Image (tube, rainbow, N blue to C red; front, side, top):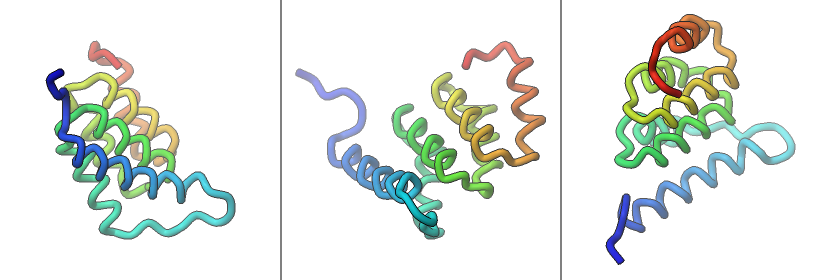
Amino acid sequence: MPRIGLPKPRWTLVAVLLCLLLGSAASAGPPREVSASDLDKLYELLETGDHFKVRVQAAKALGLMKVMAATPRLIKALRVDKDHLVRGTAAWALGSIGHPGAVDALALAEKSDVEF
């Protein structure tokens, strides 16, 4: 059977990174500070991930962790990503984060004819 999507080692790396980050966001107690290098990896996955599932999970992780600094990158994904699931997850993440700067982008996306 032919392989579809990313090679398994790449998926494994993505899965481990997201589990570590999401696990810290979902655990009881005070949230763990996310390192700048972890955020940079998530931003890279959101913007250049080869597979839409990788970009969806990166947007989801940023939304679950409520990373305010991710707002401009999520707005960009909302506007330009070619996959509707990534755009929809970016919209959800922006709503979850609740940054006031996302309101205009979400309103514009709602009025557009692009599928979410």
